[in-house]
Length: 480
Image (cartoon, rainbow, N blue to C red; front, side, top):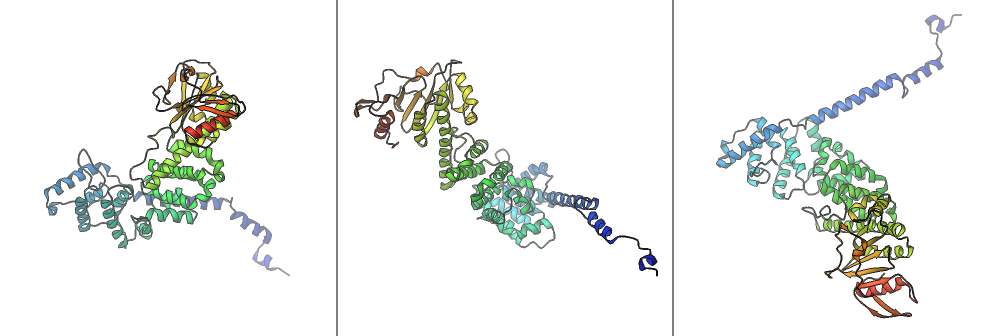
């Protein structure tokens, strides 16, 4: 009897058909590759078109429109101000513009009100993009009155927006992130809560990626860090990338200070070398006071954190230098151990030595990037003698590699060597042979002490460490 397959001329294997279907829709099939490629092109096109809505090509028109507005407002009759819509759109981007001695519109509250009236009389939703650009750029301005007025105007327009433009609809949906009080903090906290990358915060708001450099995102990054800092080891690279993209010195100081303080614990000790590198890259060497100066508008907490972080960073670097100096220049474990105990008290330090000593230290990866700013070179190239200068409270202490004694100078003494020295003939110039011994002792008893002088590293019935610890407690007020 003839089968159904023969009648219909169906000659195939169900197993082979199943396998062919699986291959056709596999992740490596031609069809899947074409679909993925097409999807990627659509995503790129969508992003490109979306960002194009924010692009403003009339920067060259801003000076002329700015001058026209200024001239019109000086007449005193606002009814004489006539602007075309294209000019008003340009004005939306010109609010912060100023030239020569003419202040910006943003800095003059009365002019800002005039501008808002002009916008209201000839309103176009496209003006919002320029206004938001100005708003986010000036997020941390000290001119809070104008900032609040601008924010109120923008939010009122977004709240009443009923159009179909995807960008403006998205901004309206996310309006909670643009409140002048804590909109930025709200965004940073939400990104952390939802495990969203801080690097993609502009996409989260449907904003152009290059807007990530705007002042608005400073506190966004800070709020994000505060909420997720317990995961610092896993997010520190992301934070570094974010700081690089944001490129704002104030944000750098805010975040780097917080990270340094957090890592000054045993829990995050393994991150300290990386954090030192980040701090140098984004803020600078703590030896440079200007780099770590307080920024305009800093709160009391931020001022305190910046100072604390700089001190901690100095301590980390100081400990490394003490370790390397007493291993390579003097090779004295006891002196290294003693000064490491005092590292938290050391305010400043400098190493003095020959070019050979400097080269040796530069070749040590533990301190290589910090050497040049903290080294004073003698005139000799190969002299093996070196010295370590340490400032603690109102004293300068100097350890020498060629002597069994160190010197203690009061900073108020006019003959005290300067910690600022950048060149010197030899380390012997740092010694004052006429100075008395710091401590005189007999057996296990200290018979006489002086507030300045020399102290040898020779033991007697008392270890030199115990003798000096007693002296420093008495004259410097520190328990070793």
